[in-house]
Amino acid sequence: MTRRKNQFFLQNAESNNVIEIGKPLYKTIRGRWRDDYFRNENPIVLELACGKGEYTVGLAQAFPETNFIGVDIKGDRIARGSQAAQTLGLTNVAFLRTDINFLAEFFLEGEVNEIWITFPDPQPRPKQEKHRLTHPRFLELYKKLLVSDGMLHLKTDNPELFAYSLGTVSQLGFVNLQYTTNLYESSLNNLHLGIKTRYEQLFFARGFTINYLQCKTGAV
Image (cartoon, rainbow, N blue to C red; front, side, top):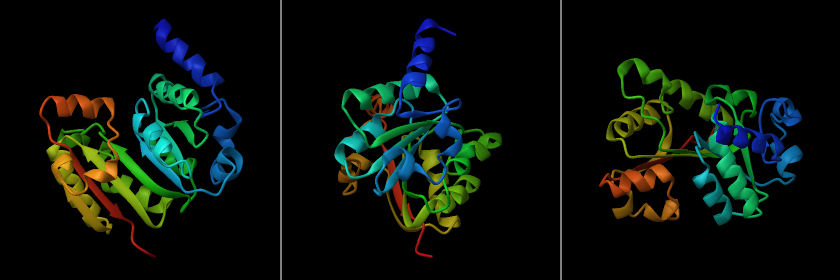
């Protein structure tokens, strides 16, 4: 382990806005995010595979009456977002360090209002399909955690993953689908509020267009 990574892990251990193994809330937070962490009844929004948390922090700044949780397994990455949120004095931000496969261990059914997936690993090889964050097994999980009529967003520079995702969200019964293969030239552009992750900035600078979709679970 490098000294810099070790510093990030120590920072997470000392940060109240990071929920990770070894901390009391890690085992008790399921169904208790509003009561035991945010201490309000505001909506909860997740950013999955949040990396350094640019989107989580950016959305939290834009919507102070909403609770945002960035989820990632990489502690050195979420440490950056954790520190940024603390520097900005944001109290509507948390970071959960866990594998996305285990989301149901941390959220009850219907506890989440909205989910963002921003520039996930496209897992391009056929044998990697089950690891794509828009694979049906993940979409089934999201539908359970989201409220009735809950919103799902995807941003990616990868056209193959995007085409795949358009198919799977329709297959799984998500409704009110809106999408574009060129976000910045689209009428949907205002929805992302100008927030760009590091990867998004890199991809856009290299000439890639940004694909975006949003859809809803549908009323039960």
